[in-house]
Structures are given as C-alpha cells and as structure tokens.
Length: 220
Image (cartoon, rainbow, N blue to C red; front, side, top):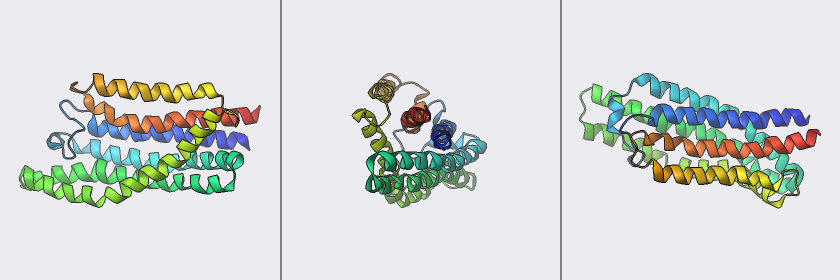
C-alpha cells in the first residue's frame, strides 16, 4: 500500500517537471522577459510552442493531482483528519494550476498572435489579452493558496523531524530556494531570462521529494 502512495509522490515530481517544460516553451526565447504580462515577441514565436505548452499544463495538472493525494494521505496519517481535510484542497489547486497554465500560457499568447495576424495593431492585441489576465486574478490567488497548503504542511512535517522525514531533507528545499534567489540576481539581464519562469513549478516538485522519502521510510 505504501508503495502506491510513494509512486503517487513521484508523479507529483513528474507533474511539476511537465509544468516547468510548459513554462520553458513559452518563456525561453531570446529577449523575452517575465516583467511584462504581454510579450510582443509572442508574434515571432511559432504557434506549436503555445499548443505544446498547453498540453504540458493539462497533463502536468492531471498527474500532480496524484501527488497532492499522496500528500493528503501522509498529512492525514500524521497530523490528523482536520489537517488532512485542509491539505486535500491541494487536489483542487492542481486542477486550477492546469487551467491557469492553459489560459495564461497558451490562450493568451495565441490570442495575441492571431489578433496581429488578423490585422489588429499591437496595442489592440494587447488590450484583448489583458481581458484574459483580468479574468484570472481570483483563480490565480486560489490556485496559489490551494496548491501550497499541502506543500507547506509537508515542510512542517520535515522541520518537526518526528514524522518519518529526516530534518536534513529541508536542506534540499532550502538549497533550491537559495538557487532560485541566485538565479534571479545572476540571470536578470541574460537574454534567456525566461528560464526563471520554471522555478516555481520545480520548487513544488522539490517538496514532493520529501514525500518520497516519507513513504520509503514507511516501506522499510
């Protein structure tokens, strides 16, 4: 039984990697930055990148749902039913993440690209896209809250050191967080700075490593 949940934790890691791959397809392009919501360079990028990114987000969300369920099971076992009921919301967070990735990472740039192709000016195309971003403000907030609830509880279990996850595992999470900060500083003016868009998804996958360790301990 524990092996099943361990494999689900692995799926959480894989789902995060798919999200990161989807981000790379959109943001890893010379001259493209993360400071603007609307990127004029989308007009130059081939449409297949946006379509492939959408599929990465859809499958990433579906797969990460299994990782969220693995987290829910571990949290319920160790922290009780109330904490479990809170953490189960992470499954809804994975669904919202897939939806947000589709809208902001695929529908948004495709709308911009197609509007220009139909004769709209860059300003008109940008205004059309901004409507999508305004619709996504509330879902984005809920997505972040719901997705990170179980991950924060897993980090709490790690820091406590009494739930089967060695305290030293937190060094993996802290090390990755430090790496993100360093990349933000070092790559800010780099022409491939869009790679920074993958870091949030990879951090989520990093926390699932803690769960893999937890279930491995259960199996021994």
